[in-house]
Amino acid sequence: MYLLVIVWAFICAFLIIAYPIYLYKKSSHSSFLNENELENSINQVELYSFDLKNKPMGWSLTLKIPEITEEVLFENTILFYLETDETCLKLPINNATLGYTANVFKNIGKVYLTFKCLKDGVTNYSTPPCHLHSLKVLLLKSKCSLSINSKIYNSPGNHRTYQLLKLANINIHDYEETLGYLSNISKIHFKGHYKNRVMIPQCKKSNFSSNQELMPELSGRGV
Image 1 (cartoon, helix red, strand yellow):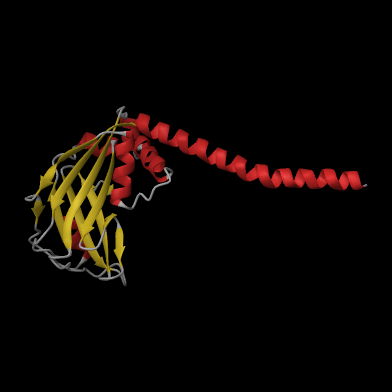
Image 2 (cartoon, helix red, strand yellow):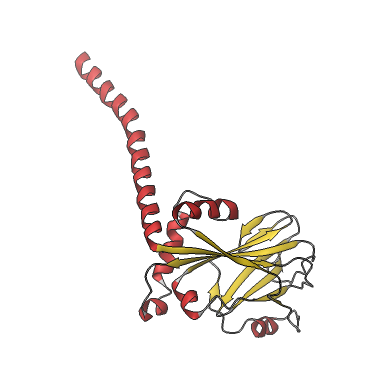
């Protein structure tokens, strides 16, 4: 009887010690595989910076980015980070201090930023000109191109790269942390800081139709 108790206690102690070790090794192995797959899927990383300082802002703005071609739009992961006088975080973001939510929509050759009141998410919000600093764009180019079927079915290769980034044990919403991680698995090509890419919309109506006119045939939000 005592022997059974001792054996049972030994088994319980072994499980208590061994199981956390097993989980840790399994997690480490999974992280290694994810990082290895991510490294093999990314050909290069391009960094673009667009100046937003002292621009006459409204509730929306358009940036000309001819580097976003149709091929780039459908075959690659694009991360957008909004740098303000407080932080540099991945879009979309909610700014509780000033009470706005910022979103990004991408299209061929253009990017659209919109600002809405955080309270209801509908009312247009005019950002203070001194608040915005720049828009950082990280373009993760894939090693293999996708077929036309991939474009139709929402670019699974693109989606997989983004999912791997989220599984990489980093805060993907933080610009510095994401850039540091990517620099360890791929060379970062800085393409320049552009000051004259902002297009100020002529019409700034508050209704839904004006929003549609401002952003025609959008491909989708930034990931």
